Length: 90
Image 1 (cartoon, rainbow, N blue to C red):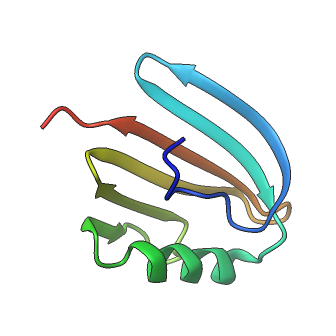
Image 2 (cartoon, helix red, strand yellow; image 1 turned 120 degrees about the vertical axis):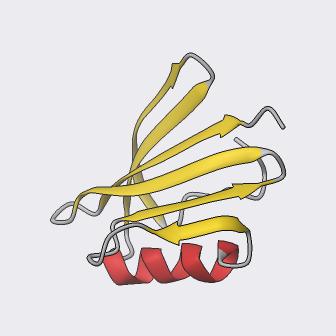
């Protein structure tokens, strides 16, 4: 995982998997939905293609240093998140 990409207030690392060139990390966070969203939005809000795709703010995506990153809230009751990243061919 790139050093600048951290798991915000990780409570439990559930799974790490790799599919083709994509790495998927599933983790539970101690932060609630808005806190986690705010953290990543503040940290990466100035990066290329930053987006909040839904009004309920459960997907964050951006490109940084040649990596494509998508952070998704999978289960709000458990604060379970998926963080996917892959190297972009630019």
